Length: 253
Image (cartoon, rainbow, N blue to C red; front, side, top):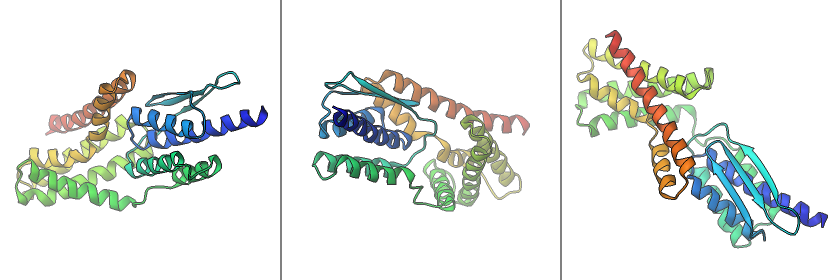
């Protein structure tokens, strides 16, 4: 009986760790719940009940013993779809019987403790390039590509810096968009940039929560109303912070 009890707790630990990694990395709520249920079923826990929200995971398993329940909090959330894919790959191997509980937990632990495969400057460079490309996509002039490139990279770097300084999303996003607006206005005022609106639009695009908005809609369509509304509210606050930062810049100039 004690062995069965310990095995149940081990299964719950694996499922919770997998769910935590996926939720922190930007996976949809229904995908997290489905993965946790599949992993539990593969290890023999067919009566499992995950309940996932953007800020926490509640997981229970029924068996011969009274129902066991665990709760973990999710504080930090980011976008790392590579980790989501790796957890999905481990889930498939568990379903195929290639991993024991201990081996699965070790593999998931490695993913959890691994950092981003890309350095800070790679992220900033990618944001800068995408800012210039978004400017062209929104029918801007090629002459404004370099101002948008510099402004977008500086804005994204500011976002990361302010988030480290004060771990409040609204503050960092507001400050980054304000710097983007000021930098774009500076380029235009000294004659390097031509179209202020296009430079700003292209530069703020790396800050826009596109994945969050998509996940909110997909969760709502899948019936996860609480998670969908919560993610939608999060996306709205991000959009409001970006708009407020640009609006404050225009109020000064």
